[in-house]
Length: 174
Image 1 (tube, rainbow, N blue to C red):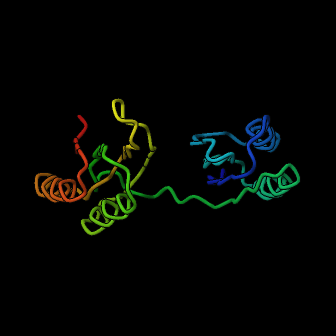
Image 2 (tube, helix red, strand yellow; image 1 turned 90 degrees about the vertical axis):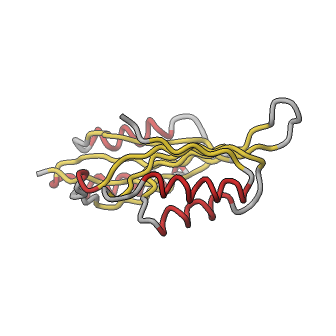
Image 3 (cartoon, helix red, strand yellow; image 1 turned 60 degrees about the vertical axis):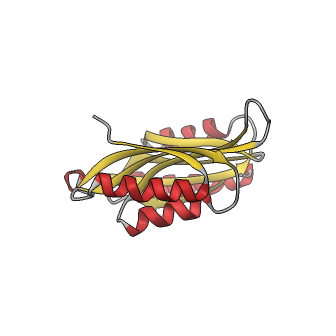
């Protein structure tokens, strides 16, 4: 049998961190399945999923803990992949507007109240083309309950977008 593990990693950004992770996974018969990694404020941060033979799981966990000596903190969690995909529908949300505190809080609250799960979320602050003012940009992959009334959800989010003075699109992928 194989175990699916989700790893979170953080440490000072430097060359070779991904290679160190990959080497530990490979040395224990693991398979690097998926990941999201980025450099943020001088830190290397990421999340990844690996599959490893059950008999090598503890040895891999121990090897990952040893990466602390290289400045990398790794947290290992077991993954339960039993989420039924048929009970939800995918949505894509994009927004842009003048940066200000509270945008993420307001939208995440509205989504959570309607049972919408944030699956993937990317944000950044960029300079506006003409004025140079900071603009907040976000894109999210969402999963909504199958019975969600998309027009009602869109109306709710559009109303919030008007209150916060941001442009928003909510799409249902094909």
